[in-house]
Image (cartoon, rainbow, N blue to C red; front, side, top):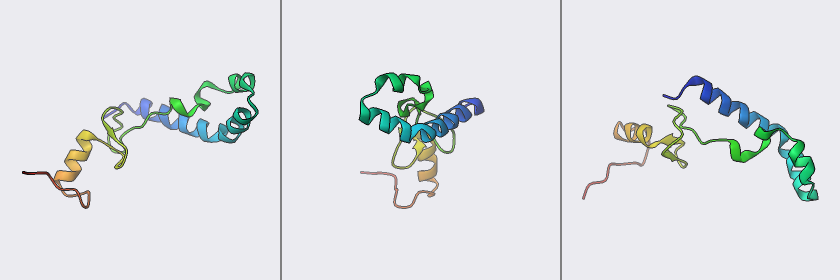
Length: 89
């Protein structure tokens, strides 16, 4: 499980991105890069990291399910994800 502080920091970045989204869009449309530099660093959506909803892990994230590979496998094997079966051939 990821540290709670990392998860909280990422949530704070998401809130900052949402807060400045309209302002960033109008500055980018106007081509005002000096104005973009004045915005907070965390207002850029690139700085937000995809994290697993269960564990907070950032690596091996499966976007379609919102889980890391480890949490996905555990959920799939125990039958919590509908339509996902273990492959066998």
